[in-house]
Amino acid sequence: MYITPYQKKQLRTVIILLIGIPLTIFAGYKAIQWFTSAGAEAQPQNVIIGNLAQESVVITWTTDTKVSGSVVLLENGVETTTAIDKRGNERRYTHYVEFEYLEPSTTYEFKIISGEGTYEGEDTDGYTFTTPNVAVEQPTPVAASGEVEGNWGDDVLVYVTTKDKSVYPAVTILNSSGTWLVDLSVMKKVSDKSVYQVSPSNSLVVAAVSGVNDGGIVEGEYGEIFNSDSILTESLNPTGTGYVSYFSNESRLIAQADTPEPVDEEPYTPPAIGGPGDEVDEDVDEEIGREYELRSDLTWGNLVSGDGDTAISPEKYGDETVQITNLTDTTFTVLWYSQDKETGHIMYGTSATDLSERGRDERDGIASQGQYYLHSIEVTQLQSETQYYFKVYSGDEAYNSQYDVTTYATQSTPPEFETLSGTVTAQYPESVVVTAWFEDNDGVGSSGLSNTISTLPDSNGNWILTTGGARDEEGGYFDKSDEDTVYIKPLYLSNTTEIKMTYGQASSDDILLTTELSAGGKFVKIPLLDDYGILVN
Image 1 (spheres, rainbow, N blue to C red):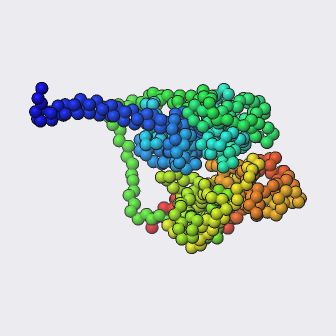
Image 2: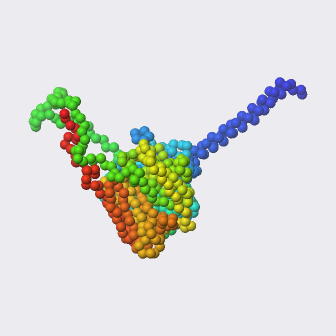
Image 3: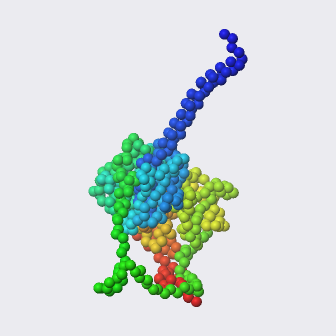
């Protein structure tokens, strides 16, 4: 049969359509499948509230694939504060976001940003948590620590909770040596959000988590699974075990039961006007006469007299207060005080002429910066035996000096896991940093002085200082004996007192530190004034 050229062209068109349309549909189906599965893998799972305090909280979750994660707080449905993972914005299976400076006894809504998606929870109220009321008594820190098996980097969460699921858990992340440290006094009871007091007979569960269904569990009485130094006697292996069932529904964000049901109040009825036995005509609106004086000649005056300036600001600030602490092979911390409350950061790099990396305050998020007198910039993930240069940026100005620091060599073995803990009393705990250093006193172990280490206390003044990683002048771990001397000095707005004790004494008891505001002029508590500073000309 003869086919004309026109018929051949039509036949080719039909064949292309018959083959092309199914292929296009199949490709579209596969694309939808891919995008759907990618979104599902990034969806937050096992969202758990931990370290619940009157002014802070930690929000954790896991995902089926490695993604970056952050959390957005909402106020009346409006986004306010955003915070990224405390470990940085790298892609991980586990996610740890911390918020500080919250209000006590307040319910917060939040959204989770996981990968490219935003998630608000499945309940009608979305994701929420409620901070506890202000505690009458401050808890005593209870340190717990241990090791995790395997080379996980920092992509592991460690929870401590009770076997009866009666608390919001304590949660922490790994440090560079693969060990972990957490304060058990942050555990709050689900029933009333009061502090859970840990005793040796309490049945606890310790869970190391590396993924959605990957956990390693150790459970038993606190006095049995932890030794006398509060170190877990077993290593945690965060693989292959489901862990979600060990947590209460409240800590897993089904926390609405803690919110009291609204009470229907009877409408307010104003009292009758008149004395006993007087009849009141309810149809007559009684007008109460009041006289007001409108004044336009008011001025605002200082709340203080000229001989006393009560503005709370540091006695020393600026370039002279810049200090480097916590120097290791991969990290260092930069501290300083500013004259006013302001934001702060550093720019650093391996070349004095190329400071392209930014170091943020430990308390800042990726999209929010706090204003502080005390600035503590922690720089991590550095190269060992490398010289770094940095400049300090405080508020709107850069300090004149350019600083440099050289990281130490990486040691062949991790340091001993040792801590000191205690409480510091201060009117403004957010302006305190606890520093410490060691001195050989008996010729045993390391000689000379160690470098300075530091830590920030929490909003209640509780602090835990990891001392095992302290370095000597040559960069090795400072090997301490009980007879060696430890110097502990809280830095604050005014001059503070340094305390000195043996390391054996310091490691056996909680340490109470105090700060004192100077009695002269600058640091005086203002009494309430009768006229609140309103002066009438």
